[in-house]
Image (tube, rainbow, N blue to C red; front, side, top):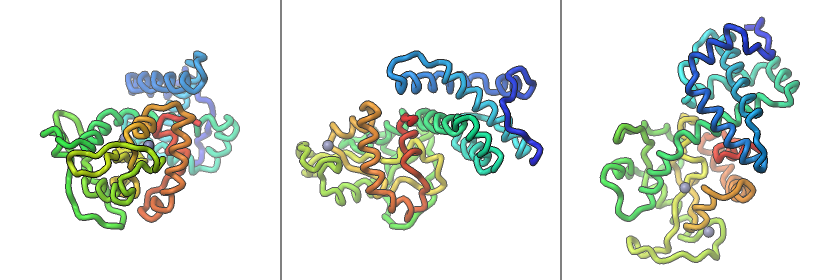
Length: 283
Ligand SMILES: [Zn+2]
Ligand SMILES: [Zn+2]
């Protein structure tokens, strides 16, 4: 392990070519996504150079990991792969190397985390929609469970297979608990008016997982607990999903600071920069 040198492994080397061949499609997808993010962040300038650099750095991280740990990376589309590659960041010589690249490798990890969360987000947001609906879709409602609430960290639930796709289930009681705590008003701004919901006669607020369920795979412990659920009016809910980065960051920072101690208590290790990445914000 000690002999591995971190350097800009040549794109002509066998190691490099092998990784490219093995993960061709996934790397292409990653590059496309990186391109989308960097263009969005770079205020409309074409930035495909940067996306290619992210991809090359990711390939070099895979080579580094496989060489250092004698283990093979089978797929890129997995939080387990992210966690494996992250082991490299604990190595002193890597820290030095990363510093010399102006932390480009840290940025690559950030982009990779963004990408993995993005891959799950469409599916997981469908379940969130069910959670907030009065008349759940029959198939999807199987993903809504009702268990007693504890205040200690618990292991994450198994994914469930529905219509050929895996989803994490949601505990309805946790979202109800979050709504109770919020007193059925928008947590971003208490003055936001909604309407009375016919299903429960309460003001309508929507449950949103601050650490998105799309990132559940990153954690061994469940992130489906009331402390991770914020209650928002419909406008603020759309805003945290779809607004420009500047606005998203204001919301994320505000809610993160309110919840950071709960995350500690629930054994969920996250800093605000990681949270930004999960929302597609690179910096
Ligand atoms: Zn949401
Ligand atoms: Zn609101």
